[in-house]
Image 1 (cartoon, one colour):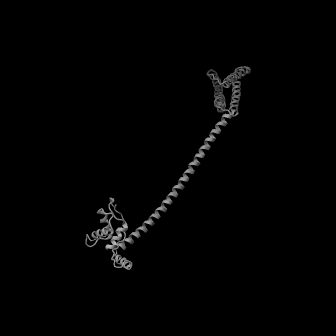
Image 2 (cartoon, helix red, strand yellow):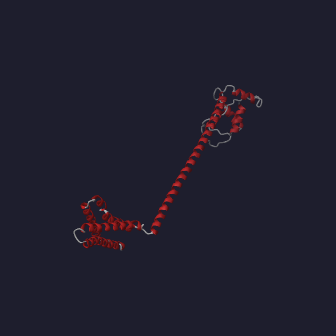
Image 3 (tube, helix red, strand yellow):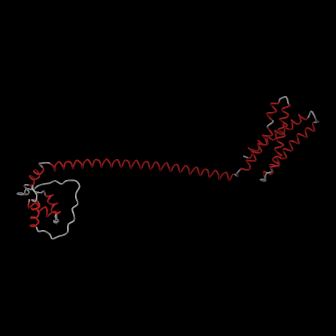
Length: 283
């Protein structure tokens, strides 16, 4: 990289010095002896070259001098001025003006080279920087891959949850339809006029001489039964008398469910088996 910046500056400086010397020889050669013109041209080029060498020495030491820099730019401007003055008085002024900027360009190239030297890094530092940049690119690529994988996983999970929820909803809907049909069938059977007679005809042969009133269960909300205080157990005769009195306390006679509710509401206590047996005996 050093040669890429220093070689153009050296070449531009050499061309500028040759042009400056040639112009001084052509310009002053007609007015003064040529050795004098040669000395003048070499003096301009030598002063420029000396200040340039001193600037390079200070730059190598990490130092800088504004005075030396000013002298160097002065010699460069002097050489450019000589070329411009010659171009204005020569026959082919356009061609000479086209090369009159070379001394200024040479100084600018040396300035660029000096800036590069002040910011140049060693190969080890450049290798470390490349390693850091590569590591950052690797981490960024891994992070992007992780985010894409997590997004795909989340999408798959949401799809699975949605499908499972849809299946559960379909099962619940089918179950609700089945229960609704069962409730409707039971309600029609319970409300039918011939249900009681059909059940009585079935059980008449099992319990001859007993006329029972059948009530199918009702599916729906239930009412909580208040807690009863434990009291003396009723005998079968007392239980039969009490059930019969509650059953015939209203005309027509109460059903078993209504009688049982009033029995417990009155504060009496008996198991469901004994209460139903007493009902069968008095019914």
